[in-house]
Length: 153
Image: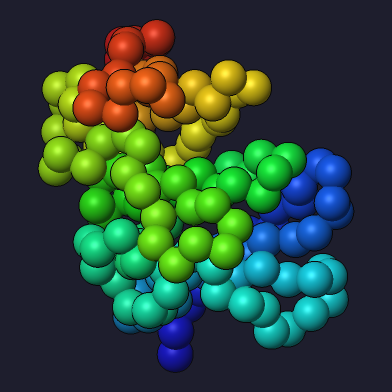
């Protein structure tokens, strides 16, 4: 039996819904689907087109968080690929906007991320569990982030 986590995100202007399915056991549901209403059981896959995990620009590998701006642009933490993918509505391929240089602790990398926020200037704030920090990534520089907050334990 496949175990899936269902996350519903509502865009503020259009009141459309986005569903992220995450396969935890077999990892076969690495995709994001568009739903026209909350009660719908079927959606149109708009990110992670193949539904199979991987590292290409059309794939996700265990997505853990999503942010959808009012334009419908999605920012998805691609946990196992240690990156944030940006998907424009209708595009079959995403683009890497943070991380993507392997998992690690340098400011060009990220590791074990579960939360993100995108401000109105398209700056991306990523909370990293493994690195105990919050890193800000600018839209003009997707190769390295800037340390915003470091947690000590």
